[in-house]
Image (cartoon, rainbow over the protein chains, first blue to last red):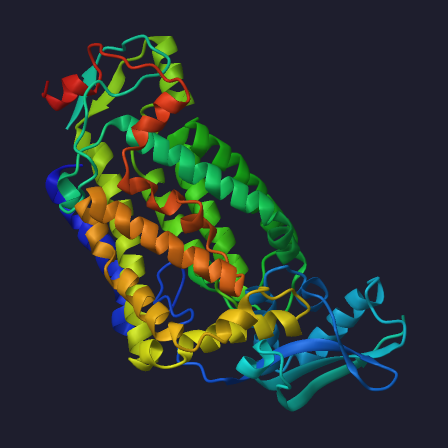
Length: 144
Length: 330
């Protein structure tokens, strides 16, 4: 490729990379790279799924049971999307079917709940009580 | 212009003259020996294949999904999930092409197939509600290398040409230097955009407020609630109130200062060390790994990679048709 061609391609690549910034449109593989860029307060709403034991207490599952992945970004992102798309019941059933065969499921687990919880994450990191609010989006029974 | 020169009859070689050390400010005029581009082909291909193999269960699992699809990237035109066999076939073809890309076998075919295969797979994986932004850079690098003459040396294609006595294509050193400089420019722009995003979306509060500390605490809480294991030092660092504005300011400065890497020399290496430490900090404090920069492959196009040949015992060849002859310099 001659010099003019190289200049043209370089400009096109540069323009393609900058375009998402100009149009504020995140995509793939051209992105605005918004990860960790938004202001975040100490009080945050997080999506998760939990086992509920006979006493009604929530118990933690595992990344793989909740989202069939060991990547928390994927598990959290997809669960959040499922809740906002109104697919919490379906996701709950999928999680329950995985949890039934899971050795870590508490013996007295009676249900799986897909929830969003509001926490003061700084208090939580420092070992304090952090839960401010808990919303159940879906509940499905399990018998281990 | 492409100049045909006789084959020198060697199976492997090193450039016979030294090229300027890594200054890439004028992207289109950067010169490099073919071995430098070949080394980046091998590094980027090895990284991408390893990444695909390690993440293979996650990609295979995509074939059984049915709900929650919203096409992104190369999958933007899909109205819904594709048939499971299409996902499995794409994975198989991409990994097979990746071996060809990395070893330089039938590179004109395997190179683009691998790069677009990775783009397709990562696009499809990102179409279920969560984009992984660390996949962007490696994918763009693969696309650049796949469309460049990266298999002119240190490749099965070159070896086959030599064995058959076929005339080897010789090109201007800019044919090898420009793709590397373009890859470097992409790295620089990526970090600048990430720095701009923090100021654009987070404002100065991102630096002078508690945003970064809260991100670290948020990552720990998210992992904890989802059943993972948060960073053991998260609680400790969240308590270091005074340090966060300094760390946040340094992070934004490092990202916005990325263009100095194009100056080469100590500026480049200083920036690479700083950005690597930033990623190492993200890994330690948040357990969020950006493997492409952490393994330094992202920064490889800034460096004289042909030197890696000496580490693996590649011989120096000074013969007609080698780099010194096509550059017209001693």
